[in-house]
Image 1 (spheres, one colour):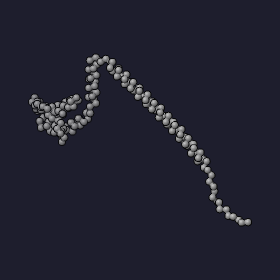
Image 2 (image 1 turned 120 degrees about the vertical axis):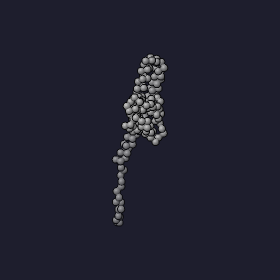
Image 3 (image 1 turned 135 degrees about the vertical axis):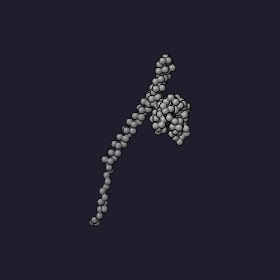
Image 4 (image 1 turned 90 degrees about the vertical axis):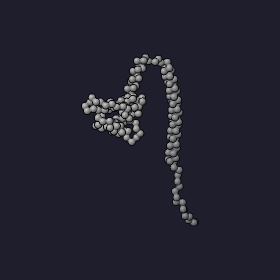
Length: 173
């Protein structure tokens, strides 16, 4: 009898049933999630269509209402116009103009009145100074190195004041 040597010492691997089961369950779960995702997208598209239809209907109804609406009486229109002007006046960026004037002002020139024309976009300053050169110096400081936007519209001497002063109107284009 001959003795044979058995060299099969490597273990035979079994199928990984647990891993395959996990893979199958994860594939099923991913399928369910994908299905729910497509259903959600379809329902979202239907809701968007409904919203757009409702918006168009609302626009049509409001256009019909505006066309059939009677005009308010002139007093209401005048009040509405004045309220709109006041709101625009309150919403004006005053900081920009006030900071310009504040940086250019000195003790030699007194600012008496500041008026703003929002429609024309111009600013009117009524100032008073002892000498015309002080007023012109303020205009130079207001203009700075940029293109001249501020100018002296008119001035007059006030001889009744003691000492006599010069009152002028500075305008920003």
